[in-house]
Length: 231
View (cartoon, rainbow, N blue to C red):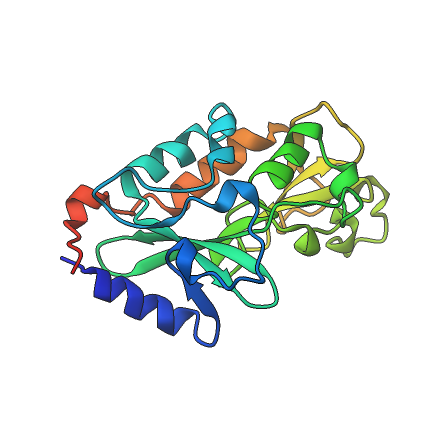
């Protein structure tokens, strides 16, 4: 059994030196939240709280949303130079954290304007990146972490890779990437670092991202199974 105190203690260690907000009243008056972020917190007596923008991506991330409903212990705001949202999970042994960035407000940010329109929707409506902490992997990358596949290829002829933008890292050197300026296309590739000039083409980016996140969190325990009690 874990308790609320266990969660708070672990958060304070993992995010030492940064302000953690567990309720709207904890937020400094000079901090303006994205409208969709006003519902957050830790609690098992009600359904888990997370940005409502996720709900419009049920078709793209069905397994991720199912995991939220069953296993998400709650969400916490993290305030430093940037405002981020922490998602709290537990595997029966230790805590897992995903961190989501503030939604994109400027269309010129990073590679944003070159991404497929549906992926742009995610960055605008949900998060600028949603990745495992602290590795910044196993989820849609924040715009500042994206790169062109050509930056990863050491081969002399990397011309094929220049038009591909990474949008997801598995943390082991492999990436999901999309072709720049294919606005209505969710087709992409997997760039395998062990076979850099022969990527796996024709994959559905959302299907792969959802599946990889699910595999990464497959040992996460449900809230009922953890029997968390708040004190």
